[in-house]
Length: 454
Image (cartoon, rainbow, N blue to C red):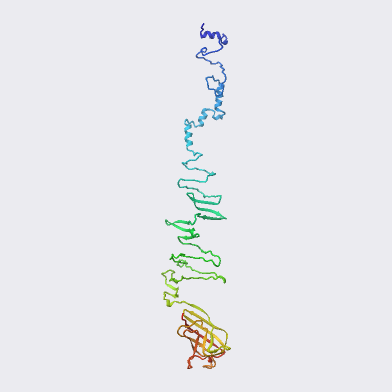
C-alpha cells in the first residue's frame, strides 16, 4: 500500500518532534523535501580530510581547516586576499608587470647592458681575465686612476700580442718593447703637425734620435777607463755631409757667452784638446767674425798651415812654429879642442816661425883650446837654406885684436845649406876671422836670423 510523504513523516515524527527509527533504516533523496529550511537547526556532518575533493558536505571546521592550510601560517598582514592584493600593488596584471621588470635585469649568465652601472662606493671583485669592448673603451674617473698589478708588470697588447711593458725591478721603473729590434718612439704634435720627437733605435743599442734641440744645463758623455772614447757626430757613416755648430749665447748684450774646451790631464793620462781634419780633406779650421760661412776669417788652419785673414795662398801659410835652446861652441875650422872649455851653461835660445829662424846666444870662453883656422860657431838648431844668411855678432871681446878696449864688432853669416856661423873681418885680406884672434876669458854675444829650406 502506498503512503503519502506526509503520512510517512507523521509515522516517523512524534507529536513531541522526535524522529523515530526509519522503517528501512535509510533516508533517500526521495525522503527529503525539495526545499528544507534548517534555520535554527544544528546539522552535524563528519569533518572531511584536507584536500578532499568530492560532494561531501563541508562543516565550518573543514572550512577553517582549509583556509588555514591556504594561509599556511602567513603573517597577519598577508593572510587575506585584500592584504595580498595591496601587497601586489592592487595590480591585476601583476604577472605581466613582474615579467616585464625581470626582462630589464641582467641575467647571471650575462647579457648586454642598455645603461650605466652605478656601483656607488662598492668594488667590482672576482673578475675574470678579460674586459672586452666592441668599440672604444673609456675609463673615466674624477680622481686618480690606479693600475695595480700584483706581479709588478703592466702589459700593453694589440689583438693579444704584447707590444709594450711597464714594470718595476729592484725599485727601478722600466719601459720595454719586447719585440726584437723594434723602436720606442715618443710622438707629439707641433703646431698641428705630428712629429717623432724622440726615437730610440733598438737595433742600434738604443741610439737616441731627437727631432729638435736637446736642452740641458750639463751634458756628460759617460766614459770610464783610459781606453774609453766617446764621440759627437753629425753622421758616423760616409753618407753624411752635415756640419756641427757649437754656439754660446744669443749674440745680444744680455745673452753673450763663452765656449771653454778643457781636458783634465794627469802625468800618466794626457788630456789633450785636439781639433783636426781628416787626411786629404780640403776643409779648414777657421776662426771668423760670425761662426758661419758668411763671416770674415781671422785665422785659418788647413793642410798648408796657418793663414791670416782671407789669405788662402799656400805660399803664405805658416806651417811651423817652435822655440827652444841650442848649444853653441866657438871653435876653429882646423886643429883640435885640446883643453877647450866654456864657463857655465851658455845662454842660447832660438825661435822658428815658418822658415825664419832667429837665434841668440851669450857664452864665456874659459879656454880657447887648440883650435886653429877660421872662427866658426857650431850647434845651430836648423840647417840654412840654399842661400847665405847674414848674422850679426854684437861684440867679440878680444884684448889682443883690433882695439885696446877688447870690444870689436864684426860680422857673421850662415852659409848655404850649412849649420854653422862663420865670422868675418873686413880688416884682413882674408875676410874670414882667424881663430888665432880669439881671446881667452871673454864673452861672445851673437844674434841674428836665417832662413831654412823648409
